[in-house]
Amino acid sequence: MKKVVILGSTGSIGKSALEVIRKFPDKYSVLGLAAKSSIHVLEEQIKEFKPKYVAVYEKRAFDEIRDKMKGVEILFGEKGICQIAKLEEADVILSAIVGAAGLLPTFEAVKAGKTIGLANKESLVMAGELIKKEMKNTGAKIIPVDSEHSAVFQCINGCNKPYIKKIWLTASGGPFKGFKKEQIKNVTPEEALNHPKWKMGRRITVDSATLMNKGFEVIEAHYLFNIPIENIGVLIHPQSIVHCLVEFIDGTYLAQMSNPDMKAPIALALSLPERLPSIVKPIDWTLTSQLEFELPNTDVFPCLKLAYEAVHIGGTMPTVLNAADEVSVEAFLSGKLKFNEIYEIIKKVMDSHVAFQINTIEDVLEADSWARKMARKEIGE
Ligand SMILES: NC(=O)c1ccc[n+]([C@@H]2O[C@H](COP(=O)([O-])OP(=O)(O)OC[C@H]3O[C@@H](n4cnc5c(N)ncnc54)[C@H](OP(=O)(O)O)[C@@H]3O)[C@@H](O)[C@H]2O)c1
Image (cartoon, rainbow, N blue to C red; front, side):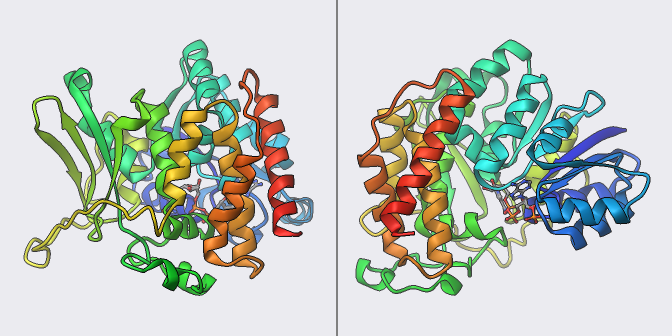
């Protein structure tokens, strides 16, 4: 029986993880759950999965749930979340909080040498080198949950690694695939949130529409697999069936395929080295006659280029990229920015940042906080 802690249990990834756990009660138990403020969902989850520990970020939500739920240890705030991220009894920590809020709990899990199912790509974008260094010290393991990275992880297993020439991450292209520069200016938050293939949280859905999410994934792959950023490419693949292509020096490729369903990489992160039966619907090849691939149009979706630029500059620049994006996406969703201005704000913030080397987690937090302030100033908040 594996004991699982889910950070971000009330979100899209968290709920999918609980769906997997629900199907295999003899294999998994829930040791801990953490969320920000969605108490109704959390309450239902506590009743059903009976975790020993729960951590809630917001004070009002914490007070309410503590009063209602007796017999469960309810912890408060970021400190409480960090506590359950490093529980000694935990076999797997699923890091599925959205955004920079996932960094410290993930880092705590790394420091404690845990096995981490990583959905929170932002922690690697913000602090990739630092996390890798700490993993070496503590023996912590990261199993990727992002579908493309889970796919690469499976393809490069064993002897393949030294012979990799390039990794190709696929992207559906989002709701604005094929749009011209002029068309994209006036798209609404509702349109941006209407992803054609994946049902996800709001931030990652907007990031998928700008292709910034793919940029983050390129950075994530760079750190996860120790591959130079220029050897990581992106292909638009609207069917979302092939999740990655790994190109080898002999000119051959390995691909990993499944119907688009996050339960596949989540289940693998929980079950490795085993595989669980019947997690996703097999592909119906009578309905799938075409698999298309094309290079992304970075004139229309320039955010992708910023991710490469941030890694080339190095130091705190990827941290700044993430923070400026997080603030800009929020501003777009609340009607303060146009879609194309998300890129413009991030670019301005990056241009005014003098990157410095990251030696400690405090360096990361300092750059993150600077970039947020700068982005808000540019937005006029
Ligand atoms: N969804 C996908 O298909 C997908 C695929 C690949 C990778 N990912 C990555 O997985 C992560 C989660 O994405 P998602 O789509 O599941 O997001 P989501 O649906 O927005 O859920 C976010 C979760 O994080 C919690 N949270 C937010 N701020 C928090 C804080 N300060 N402290 C504690 N908990 C906090 C939320 O709690 P409340 O509900 O209480 O606000 C919720 O449980 C992101 O890093 C994303 O990039 C997602």
